[in-house]
Amino acid sequence: MASNFNSLQFLPVQKTQLPFISPPTTLIPHTKLVVNGRSTLSGHVTISGSKNSALPILAATLCCSGSYKLERAPYLSDTKLVINGSGSVSTLSGHVTISGSKNSALPILAATLCCSGSSKLKNVPCLLDTRTMVSILESLGARVSCFGEDIVVNTDGVMCIEPDLNEVGKVRGGFFVIGPLLARYGEATVGLPGGCDIGARPVDIYIHGLRALGAKVELRDGKVQAHVSNGKGLTGASFRLAYPSVGATETLMMAACLAKGKTVISNAAQEPEIVDLAGFLTNCGAVVEGAGTDTLYITGRRRLCGSEYSIMPDRIEAGTYMLATAITRSCISISHVSHSNLTCLIDKLSGAGCKILQLSDDTLEISAVPRTIGDDLQGFSIKTNPFPGFPTDLQPLTMALLSTCKGESIVEECVFENRMSHVTELQKFGAKIQVCGSKAVVSGKGNASPLRGSQVIAADLRGGMSLVLAGLAAEGTTEISGISHVDRGYESLEMKLQGLGANVTRTTS
Image 1 (cartoon, rainbow, N blue to C red):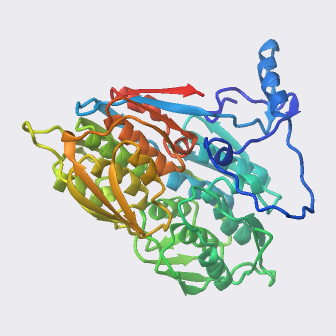
Image 2 (image 1 turned 90 degrees about the horizontal axis):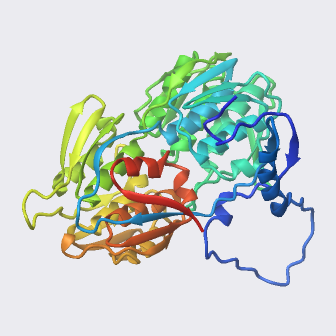
Image 3 (image 1 turned 180 degrees about the horizontal axis):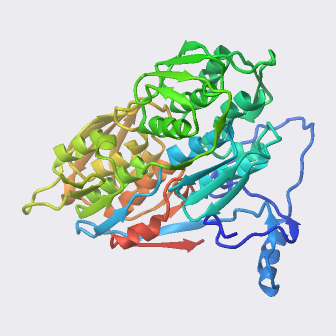
């Protein structure tokens, strides 16, 4: 059965143990390892399969007829993205279609664990993160089949309550499974969440909510262990989140759908992805009210059944292509985009001088082409906040744009305390940015002083994409290492950019 998650067809015919090399530590060139000496080693370590064996074995499959399954095949990508930038010349034109939302697909994939039978999810983006989430479900015993952008998940074979620790550590959404597992099976042991190193992602909000629903929860050896001791399952309750965490809201919503009685979650996250998750759960038989507001009302059900559901378009990807158009002073149209989900960004870009037209319910046109000689975009200030505030995921990309606008702009990050790591790399392009704590001052001179191509390193998903935008606008050639971080959140990135006329290629170091 062909899968869009792999370029080859993998069938359970022959098995060979191969190492799995996780992207974050192996794909970022020039990282440093700091060791404090005189440590005493103890415990146990399991040796991975040989990389030098894996590579020739992969090549040897070309000698054979039939299909082979290479278990835990290594992820050995050291590719770079090479961009020949535009400088002050508009290079993007045409049309781009937005893929399904990563931040919606991950929790909805986790939510299939709430349901008996099969769930068919449509419009699922083909990303490293969604592939990892599929691996997490499979490690629990779920059967997953991929057909292009459609994924079918059957959870009837789930027998394990502890997902693969390595897989959970790669993606933030891996931790979401603790809610469905606890609610449906009465216990769960899940490693701490992974994802980009952009700041703390505390699980105390999750733990507080699970305890309110009647679970006993402990944090031990880097894992969260939870179980229900009364033998009757979770019980509905009313509680308030200390912060409107998206992940905590999603996880507790899933758990409450199978709890006995009614649950009220106050100070809940209001992001569109919460509404999308509620839509899937409702399709499966859950009763969820108030999604999109700060208070959720959930009536538990004894059983949910799998259903068919289409993932919403990715508002962050849509915002990314709007910002790419602005930074290159171009004009494109974008489909599969919800205007109401991007009001903050649209207002800021319009105020800066972009012209944005809604062509249909899900299609808009954005133009940043100067109207007259000497005309250019004006700088503006942003302050990130939970929805409906300015999205933190678009902050690094917006900063790249502001470095090409006229005037001084202030960027304030109020969601993650470590989301300024991209600044050092943007400065290599010649961007004038000064950081003080959670604020950055960006001084731009517009097209009178364009960015210059550079060799830079992507350290996280959105910060990495900000470097791609800077490269599109820069004069000369830009090489971006660590591009696998960007692959975690953008489907067919270079193909879409090439379709808009950008000179972008992927090379192997």
